[in-house]
Image (cartoon, rainbow, N blue to C red; front, side, top):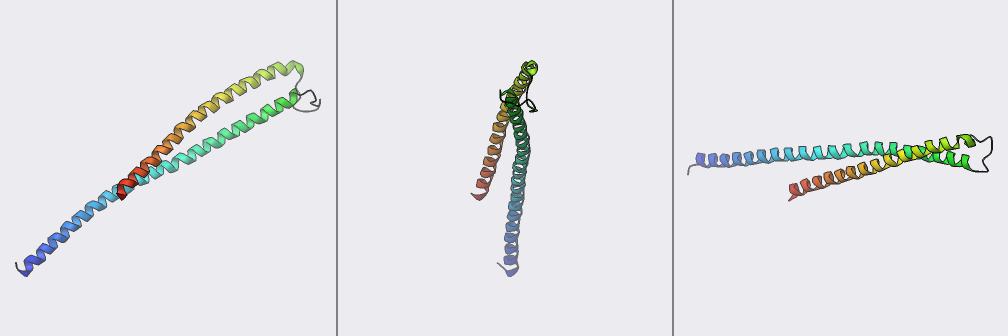
Length: 139
């Protein structure tokens, strides 16, 4: 084999290596894009959930304040000048309003709880998916 043929064979090997590297690069870029997409979904899931959690907490706090004011007005030792004091003729109506408010809050909380669990399962699934993708890349 002459020198030029040896050089050509070396060049063929280099080109084959380069094609392999190009193929690996395309695979890695695709895998990286998939991981970025998963990270984006994870990143997006938490702030949305956190915002809903904050709003729901505020609703529960407001409901607690309403219940406390109502309770204060029901107490026998509630002073006549107290803004929470309830006149006897308005007591049943206010009680009905508070019962309705409490039932509504219970439904809202049950719905939020169900949604919370669903979103946490989704978040867990996404993290598992990310972990599995990473395991495939490393192995």
